[in-house]
Length: 276
Image 1 (cartoon, rainbow, N blue to C red):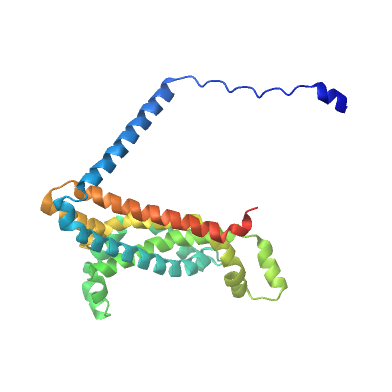
Image 2 (cartoon, one colour):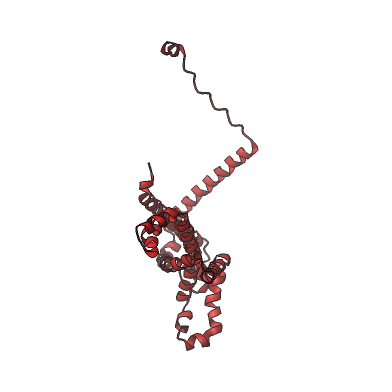
């Protein structure tokens, strides 16, 4: 058998057939070229405008607005994460009296625009001023900052609750059975066994939610919050220079890109035991 194999010459791998230049491929190449040219021109424009009078005058305002944006996002996400745990547990409850209110909450805040929710809280609270004053809550709802934090927290809590619920349901039921076999209570099993595994599954959806919150935070500028977009609108109203919005887009893009890279590192770190 070995003598026969010595006389068999290896055949070269077949060459790949040339891809024909169809209209779709030509159009794709043209569009890609235009995107590359536009990107190169944008980088050139930003490099030239980096030392313009507009940047010298407003760059500190942009930094202040960017800090406000980060504060809104971080506080809302943290409060929303705390609120999402009981909501996710209620959504998974077998009792209809607990499950249905949680379902209605998630359905409303995921099914309506964040802008409408913000207006309902910020402008709608004024219709109940007397009642809110009587119970001592008007100081909260008359402040745009608190209204934004409240609206964003309720919105992201609904999304995070669904992310967490889906991740928990993705964990094998054998984990519950193993914990019960060891004599552990259900709360201990959930917080010590199920939740850590569920969070690893939910890492990527959580990252997407944070990115959406960063971009959605621009809504705060509509209710007199001078975040990044608020400072951008003010700079444009004073200068009528279109580059004000270009620099805002650059700030948002940098924030999203930094978060994406950090999240990829975090995901790779936490899931390193799953890789072979």
